[in-house]
Image 1 (cartoon, helix red, strand yellow):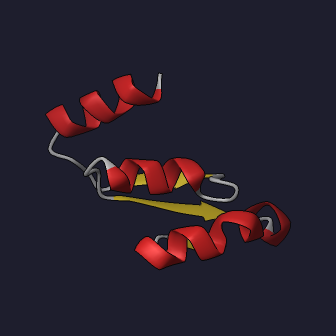
Image 2 (cartoon, rainbow, N blue to C red; image 1 turned 135 degrees about the horizontal axis):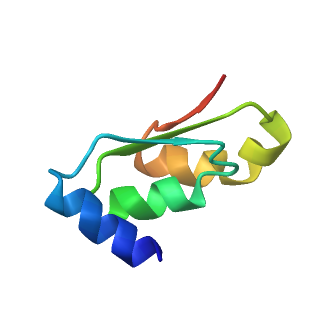
Length: 65
């Protein structure tokens, strides 16, 4: 399913893609890894914190709201 979404996003120009409710940012990081300009936002600092360091190493694309 994620590969299909990435293919559709590439076909539409590659982003930017906003992932609201992204949790720890693993999907956002994957989308960035495959060339999609993506960023995520989540209300919960608890949901966000596990992936924050991982995503921040690559991009600064996971935000709190």
